[in-house]
Image (cartoon, rainbow, N blue to C red; front, side):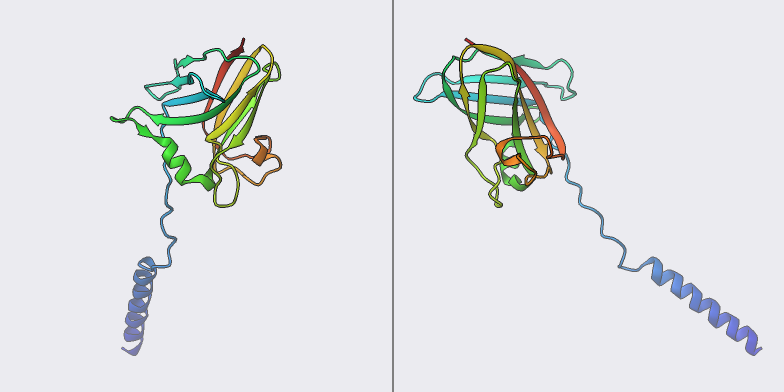
Length: 191
């Protein structure tokens, strides 16, 4: 009889252990998922230093799937320096959501890179907003244009790259890593 009582107590103890370990609060907390932004539209606005008409390069993919985007690449003037600003929009929302605001709010996690093909006589330089660590965000920049030329100008928005990688603060994307939120190439003609 004493053996039966011991077995019952051990069984109850084992059951209690299983129930409490299953309900334990030391389980890993659910990971917060930062949803990727939907970016349907990228606008690159360039204003000649000293004033003049704003020139806007536009990439627009209104179904957001990356196929058949509309791209406009107006010509730039030789031997001119432009002040630039890039804007990211989600036009699937009504009114359109300005993703640029989120990029600036999460400045430590984002950086815009401008990569110029060798055949294009243009040099981009970061200006404007820095993150709290003193690294460029890259939403604002200047673009120094030399003599007439033609080539590709690619804009990357990188998420969670290594902003302290060699050359990252000067716009070198080589060792930054991270994820690409959007990549757009414009074929630019300088006249």
